[in-house]
Amino acid sequence: MSRRHAAQPPRRTAPMAVALAAVGALAAAIGVWSTQGSDDRCAPDRKLVLPCDGAWWGAYIPYDENSSLTRPVYAFEKKIGRKLDLVYTYHDMSGKPTDGELLTPDEVELGEDRLLMLAWESTVWKEKHHAGWSETQLGWKNIASGKYDASIIDPQARRLKAYGKRVFFSFDQETDMRIKEGAGSPEEYVAAYRHLRDRFERLGVRNVVWVWTVSGYLGNADVMRALYPGDAYVDWIGMDQYNYYQCHKSPDWLDFEASQRPTYEWLRTNVSANKPLMLSEFATAPDPRRPDRQRDWYAAIPKVAPTLPRAKAYVHWNRAVPGPNCDLTVNSGPALEGYKAAGQHEYFRQDVPR
Image (cartoon, rainbow, N blue to C red; front, side, top):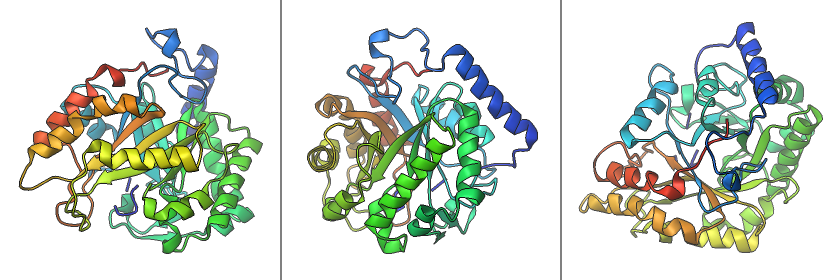
């Protein structure tokens, strides 16, 4: 989740583990990446990259007060008039059912006909679903050393393996913002990221598409460059850029293109020109004096998207963050109008693999 800015339900018992294994077996049997009614020329590759013009349309939707993810996702989809291609969720490393077990029952249900993006933080949250944004750092050097392999890493890796279907997976998203929070140094992060991927490989987890995610704030350019684990370890690059107008004291209104293109171009030039990009979080704050600006901001996305051809997934952050004028949701009004219109565009009408 944005470091200026979080997201699981009841404990899975043995039957749930069996269910996960069954999903994996069924996926293998039918060839997981068959696509219903799709044009084969645009069927995603094994890294979930669409070879044609177009991109996945996704969102982060917070859990409701009863720790349901399915209900708010279904309600959001009804509101926007379409099914999401991708649902983005967040987990800590507590190992506890509420937030620390990868692939909750709700995620498994949603993953039946949507892609999943799981963000895994090397922290333990102090409140359920990270409600107060406070956490305890486990430390990148400890992840890299293997300290948590047996207790945390291996059990969750096996859950992902049992699921069978491919998932997007981000380790410590917005990693450039975590250094000042005490997670460690860039060198320690790179070692932790590589250890995690190597560990998954050793355990036979082949259904993970690895996303390296930074805030994209260009004031952190040197830090972001130092944090990159390398093309051999990264499948996608994620960036979290916003129009924070009047939120966090941001004085300037940036339209969609102005908020996204500078970081998109910088990452392509300075980190990797080979990897697909994901707008892994994006949104605009409102303009209290000109509410229609939110509608226009979202409505412009289909026009801009083809000029950012390596951006192959667009994931909206649909949650308010602390502070005045920081409601980033598209739940009503002009924001909903613009976002709904953008999501109906053919550029974002892709067939999700089953």
